Length: 118
Image (cartoon, rainbow, N blue to C red; front, top):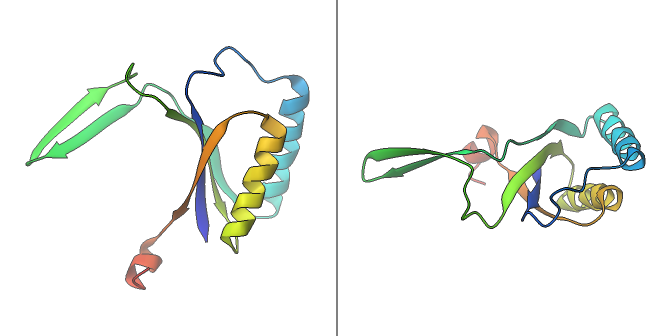
């Protein structure tokens, strides 16, 4: 099972750079997940997103950032686990390192899932 774990930001944490201890702990956590084959990809995201909307055959492209956005995804990790509970436990470990914040975990379905009707 694949899951996309996303960290979101509502600008409440702006200006709080990570300290050296947290960065070292996060480095060890990422290394452990990579060695175990659980972490498939991770990274931070540029808040200046490009929004694309399709309506009635018309495609509209709008560059960000967006003042009206209440929350924005600022980072992600794509993981592969045996169960949803394992994904939740990895997210708990992440937040124990990072501290306060918000996130989302969503299961990722691939072509094989679509063919099986999941």
